[in-house]
Each structure stands twice: as C-alpha cells, then as structure tokens.
Image 1 (cartoon, one colour):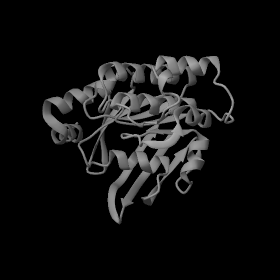
Image 2 (cartoon, rainbow, N blue to C red; image 1 turned 90 degrees about the horizontal axis):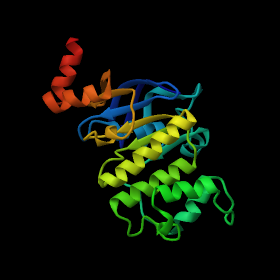
Image 3 (spheres, rainbow, N blue to C red; image 1 turned 180 degrees about the vertical axis):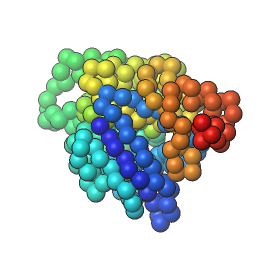
Image 4 (cartoon, rainbow, N blue to C red; image 1 turned 135 degrees about the vertical axis):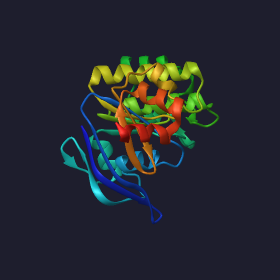
Length: 243
C-alpha cells in the first residue's frame, strides 16, 4: 500500500526526517509513538503532500505509484485521507456541505441511508447545519473530522493523535467507526498516538517508535507501548538495537 524509502524532509530549511524507511501493506494498521518534536507529524504531512514539507531525498510510493512530487489534492484523489491533530474552524461552510463534497455529491444531493446512519452513529446529526468546528468541543471536532474522512472512502488513513483532547465516549465512537471501515474496505492506516488509548478500541498489527527523525522498534504495538511506559523512549530504542 505505502512504501517510504530513505525519506529526508525539511521544514523552513531545517531537516526533520533523517532517512525514514517504512512499508505498510494493504489492510494493515500501524501505530506510531514518539516524543514531541520527534518528526511524527512531519512524516504524516509529507505523506499527505502538505505544502511546506520539502522532500530533499528518498521517495514515497503509494499503490505502486511514485507520489513524491504529486500535489496534495492528487494524493487525496488516489485515496490518501488525513485526519489532523487540530481540525481547523471553518466559518461560512456547513458540515452538511463539506460531507457532500467529501462524498462527491452535488450541492443539493441528499445523503444516502448509510451515510445518514454514519452521521447518527457519530452523534453529529444536530451539527450538520452548523459551521465546521465553530463552537465544537474537542471530541465533537474529532468526530466531525473522522466523519469527513470516512465519507471520502480513503485507501490509506493517516490519523494524527485521534485520542488527543477527546473524551472516552468520543474516542470509542471514533475508533469503532474507523475499525469498522478498515475491516469492510481493506484500507490501511497509520495512526500517531502519545498515550496509546486508541489501542483499547482499534486493532493495530504493528507499532513503531520515531525519535530524532528516525523510525525504530517495529513490533507488536502494545509491546512497544509497554516498553515505553516502563523504560522510556531512549532505553526502548537501545534495547531494540541490542536485540
């Protein structure tokens, strides 16, 4: 599904990623841990094609196609969907109109029965005619972000800290619908998390640690999380290198 080879990425002239290698097969969910400033979000933004994240070396391949120089909208059309850590507030645009756009509908087309059902599951029916994220709580913002993402039907989901700033009930709803979508569609996912709460509700095949712009310790995600909690990031990496 996704192949990253010796990827180096700079932001504002400063190199953040120092030769990242990563392969995520079709239908697999990977979880990435790491301290603040380690390069996790930079990697996700580089995969999605966000402007300002300059690839200086290496490449990104998605579904067998080199997308290293492809614009962000082109990557989205291929099937890469991104859920941001802090979804922006967009005044003047209703959530209903945005999910129509995400699903490829016209401005006056009604939602299908299944689409309305998903809106209800994420408890967003009363938010459809409100400006996107205007006055939303943290959990409401994340639920609305996931709703838009799932309406796009991506082949690869990139989720930046879906468990950050949300209540337990919102996290359960978000993770449950993401898991349901992955199982039905065969999509892959890369999920960034600090605390690991999302693993209580969402299955993940592999876990890894990013420290100082490099990836380490590819193994069972809950094992990785236990090691981080027990000995910290640096000792976890040291034990991995010794092994």
